Image 1 (cartoon, helix red, strand yellow):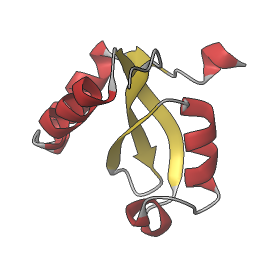
Image 2: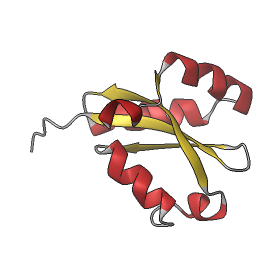
Image 3: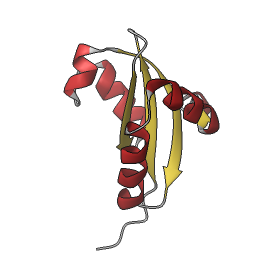
Length: 94
């Protein structure tokens, strides 16, 4: 089973200053789901402030590996990494 969908690893800044890392094929709908309290339990406890950054990957496997790698970083390192990603990816979709 082959899919041509681009997968994204994304970072969301939460209202408490924490960062959430996830993967999706649709950044806009995933962010909306997080804002509505659907999806990840973490996001229900730490409401999203903004989509901070995202990066594209060719498939789900690559996105999962990148997500894991990012989740292993300390918070300060995640902020640095986010600066190298697509900043404010939802703005370019509007």
